Length: 286
Image 1 (cartoon, rainbow, N blue to C red):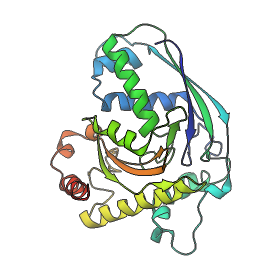
Image 2: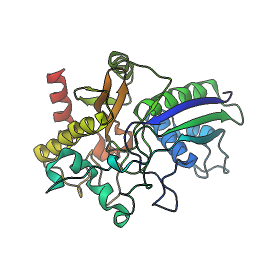
Image 3: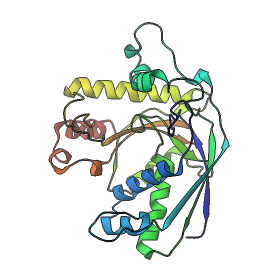
């Protein structure tokens, strides 16, 4: 891979930071971690992952990453109007339901201007290989970058809409996106909401749709945060296999729910009643 650059833009607020949680920053290690996760989701096996991204485990000698990741922020916006506020009980608002964890994270230090990047903030991602990899791995990496720029996120609460981004050079329609997603077998679209026409706050309406979906799923299936389910678990730590994701398409912001069970152990992955009900309902609507 020769050096390739991607002009990326956030479409929902991104709470990404280093040691200072009150100052948002886009960091190359965070992007590398997201690319590594999607590489795995799309079928990459440990040996391939090690050759592309490096590693210190696996029974072999430590290996440096073949992939170089660099990023440069080109437009940084932190607008306090993008921090939703509510009258009364925020939990009654589906957007407030999604935002609650972020509002209390770090004793509130992160829910303030300067600690997040607003929609419209942009950065350039540069990728290149410091040494050749196998052709199959290079092709998988290209598909990985495409998937991450269409469905990936950065920062806190990435599985719950925050830090969603888009490739400004990828001008896809809703039909284009749905056709592309249908070609993948390692993840599925479990839910699709109504596309919200573009406006400065379209992302909030898309998040409300997804927040309403999540509240309904938890209530209907009796899912609790302390149980090991497709929504993850706090103890033991288990990442969510359901990702709520506003997607930028030409028509507007499209709310979708992605199911990627690669994140789950075998005893949680298959035959879960909440997953069966989810896809049954989705199929009935589609």
